[in-house]
Length: 308
Ligand SMILES: [Zn+2]
Ligand SMILES: [Zn+2]
Ligand SMILES: [Zn+2]
Image 1 (tube, rainbow, N blue to C red):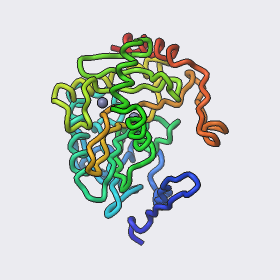
Image 2: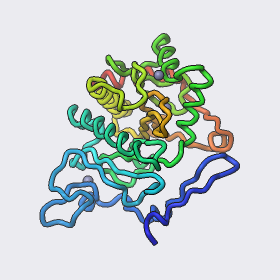
Image 3: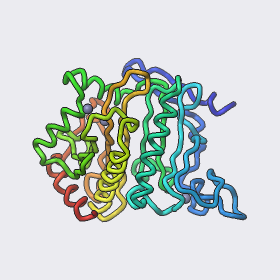
Image 4: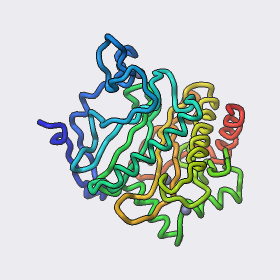
């Protein structure tokens, strides 16, 4: 059976959403010893890894255990560096900036495909969010449909009668108490109604539908803002901070709408305690959170300032 034959989409009628069955993913590499890391460079005289070079800067390749594959979508891996023990936050500034250009290129190329309606660039960091490889990397899924979360954001545009991220950014700047970092191009804040205690959104000041509309200076400042958040997270509890980072941009279905922003969902409530999605979150869709966004924003703002 080919890899692609092992992927199936089923529509869950009760929830009105697609569920992706990627059965082969059961066999994927799970937390290998570092000398068997498939994302490290291939060293002379040693077994080949996924990357057939002795050194590299940023590497992109098709996921060997894809959740989506042609002719119904795409799944790629983006390795940030050949240094196994690095992280997004510790990348050199120029490398982080290069990564923005790589994301932009993959968004352009995958988005141009007829079978990709939405490009989601994301990073899962930490075993708490299910990471199976420690080497610093992110992923890109090309969905053959518009998934529910970006669809909800487009519905918010409709409800507010204009761009929702633009409107929310204006409110966050006016109130100021939840802003955790700013530069000339990007404002980062814990949203007014954050679901996760240390959730953060980094939003382009100008209305940019996607990375394709950003100036080179904006891409550089976006990299700076994202690294500031991640370094602040690591400083917050003085340990590597787990998170899910997602880049929300315009769908690539031909209808231009959306506003580029990056969302972080960290599962930690305190240094030791995880936020679990339980009865209310799973059964009712209502998040119960024990920290006010203003309080976590104050702590995160201080951590970002100290980590800079
Ligand atoms: Zn590695
Ligand atoms: Zn906007
Ligand atoms: Zn979003």
